[in-house]
Figure 1 (tube, rainbow, N blue to C red):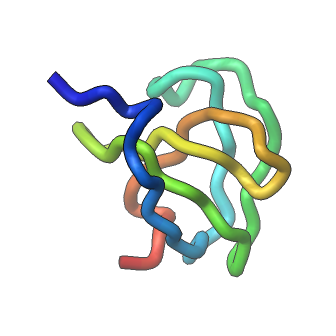
Figure 2 (cartoon, rainbow, N blue to C red):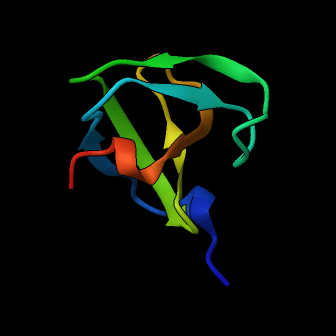
Figure 3 (cartoon, rainbow, N blue to C red):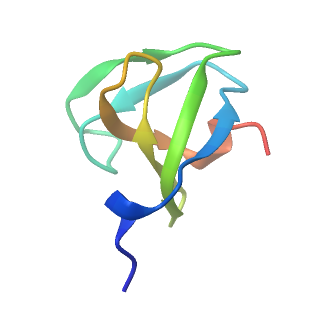
Length: 69
């Protein structure tokens, strides 16, 4: 079991424009959009979705493929 709220986030940049979502589902509520070069702080990355902090500090999900490795 991982206690993500105690984990040190991994800093990544957004590689391609992507929706920032409230849940790991393409049909989830959009919290905003992430643009190339935006910073994303990853707390968890599994099943094709990264969960973490967007540039404005809100927590949400983005497709892992949108992140620069």
